[in-house]
Amino acid sequence: MKVKQLSIATVALAMALTGCGDKNKGAGADMAQQAPEIAVMSVAPANTELETTFPATIKGKTDIDIRPQVTGFITKVHVDEGQQVKKGQVLFTLDQVQFQAAVEQAKAAVAVARTAVSTAQITADNKKALLDKNIISDYEYQIAVNSLNQAKAQLAQAEAAEVTARKNLAYTTVTAPSDGVVGSIPNREGSLASPSSAQPLTTVSDNSQVYAYFSLTERDILRMVNGGERTLNNAIAAMPEVQLRLADGSIYSQPGRVATVSGVLDASTGASNVRALFANPSGLLRSGSTGTIIIPHVEDSVIIIPQKATQELQDLRYVFVVNDSNMTVQTPIKVLDLSDGKNFVVTEGLKPGDRIVTEGVGTIVRNGMVIKPVTTTPAQ
Image 1 (tube, one colour):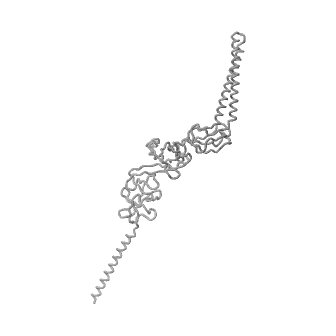
Image 2: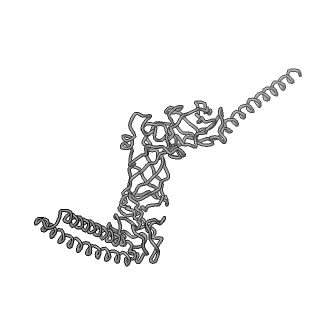
Image 3: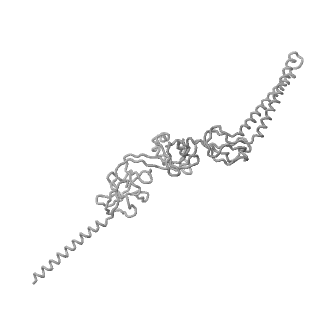
């Protein structure tokens, strides 16, 4: 009887131990199943072309304010806003009546002065003949010569006044100083035009080529010259072609080049004015419009990671590296200042073959967390 009871107890104990083992095994399986699936990527060297963008203002190669050189009422406007004009083409005509009258008056004054010179010349010649015969004194002859010289001076003065009058008359016809496109025309027929007016008659913009003006910070310029290892002119010459993104988001078909960088930093902004030159054969770009300059930067054999795979804490940037045990390790990295808004170029902290977390950074992923890695590509 005792042997039978012992056997029953032994069987019960074995069943209990077996149940505990199965329970622990199931708990381990549950823990493995509870590890979240997180996207990771393996980093590897690659070539990339980053882009930096700068807001830009577009101006014609020459923007010439058209102002009258004489005061008068506008009698005719010969062009319209936005019209393409050639050098020397008539733009405006001012009232010519008073200026034509001034020319006629000046011509009459010249005629009178010439007659006076002719008369004084005859008198001087006559006095010279009498002087040679000792009929008159040298004093009397000298008075005649002085009168002749005075008449000649008055003639020169009258001729100069005629030139001025003719120029003023010519100024009543306002012409284009260069080829270009006519801007706004605020004043029409009947308006008074004056050289002292604050507003020009119009603006003629030479849009065969345009300048896109933007700004570079002091740090950008130091990067261009590589810390002083090359001159600014050499850095400008080595810059790649730039592109222009228009206001509608499209890319302008003609590439441009950076032409000049101002040698003076604006004290208020800490930036330097930069000018890029673009050809404009179709006249699409107009003075006063805006856009965005795109400067490409080519980097060879660098590690590129998505910006969303990083987090910034106290001015330091981190990623989560996944070790061989599929555990996340918070790792500090350094990146280039340049970025395209989506990716970073890593300079320190990662090596080829490292796996990094690419989703959930800063939200569900923590340091020392066991995950179930799901490998993705940079494109994904």
